[in-house]
Length: 245
Image (cartoon, rainbow, N blue to C red; front, top):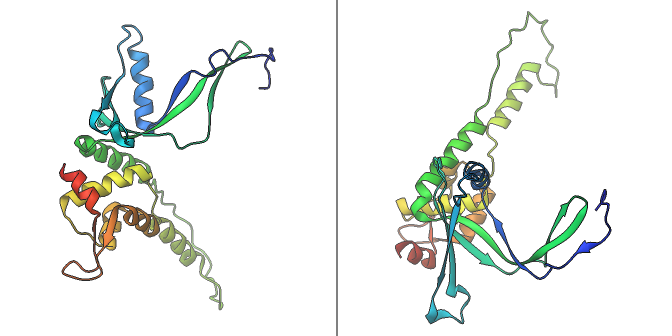
């Protein structure tokens, strides 16, 4: 590393197992604010629960991890999360630097992806809507321009005002793509309300790009080519059973 005063690297902890956790940005901010406010009394900011099914020891889903946020002032941030564990990633290690000394803090053994559990999807959906509304609200200004000379309309040339209208309309209709994990949870919630949706209905409901919505539906749903629900999507049987459980 540039600027280091010591070329030696401390590898005494190189084989220490370390977990890598991917969490939503709002949860990361909650951790930071909770840790700073609880540093006086050393109160924990979250609690991880490890579950083991002794009847499925030889299977990949025999162990499960969940997390519960214990900090105060959570607002609409859900308290309960599922932690999907994975070992399918490139080998990585954790390094630190203190006073010019570089140390290996450990080797990453497992990677976790946090997802809100269904009992917290209502508050998480509300949080997503508030965040979307905040960043999608545009500040508009009206400026009065003095009289302009008439502009001759020539073939292939748009009037300046007409061209401006076209640009504004294109930007207004552009849809912003959300996080993949958030959209999967929102999609599950919509299918709890009714079992069948058309692609057009889901796009209008979620305000997401058409191709992005198709990719999500391809993974989570089946398309009805015939029958009473022709032209609509419904959840795959394994997801229906999971929701019922």
